[in-house]
Length: 281
Image 1 (spheres, one colour):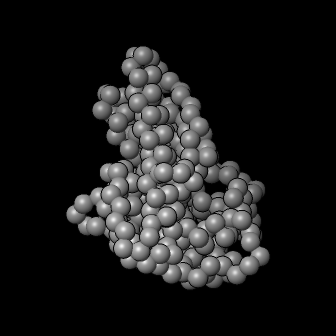
Image 2: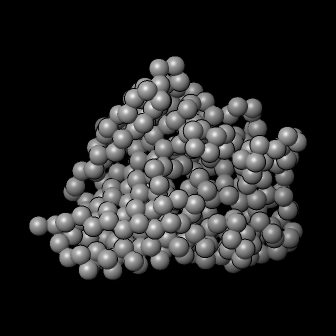
């Protein structure tokens, strides 16, 4: 009989929780320890705030400079570029300066978008053609870390579990079902997930921290949104982009991308409305 073993670790400005099902506690401990080490390594590569990290170095490049990246940073950055295309530009990892301006609630006008970075398509390298752009992988990094941790844990033979980055992103794997609560202002809606990721975005915790590339005022359109996807990386992407969409645009997005589940907190009732269940056609 399998037991659930729980492990916690602070990283990426949140608390990661690994709940692993396995009959051997020592094996689960070993898998969790390696997964936590991997999460720390990912933070040390992706954080824009850690001096010397890959992203920190990118954000301090001079025009004409080429920087070779770790595979972890390169892979995450490539996912971010794909996300820009799939979301029609709503998810943009090069808006670091705008994101900082919004988070800090600065009174001065937002910085002008300028600069150009070129990511090599066939090797882990990036070139700065013009300075001014800053990378911020905060909207994708936690999901990316959960996806990579899941791969490592499965290699240890762990049959089932759920990995969480705070309350914002969860990744369930294996045959077991896990109950997660979606908390609106006036309602908590419980759903079960299995072999799925769930990511939440909203204004309640970090206030207005999601920005649009066109710098429209009051860009977030919903108090809170939850997205179901097979990948935690892409659940993070879509939950961020969805905050900038109207309800009609959300319905169109759900119809276009199979398996994408969407829940939205209704700003009038404070209840959690289902836009799409995420069931495959």
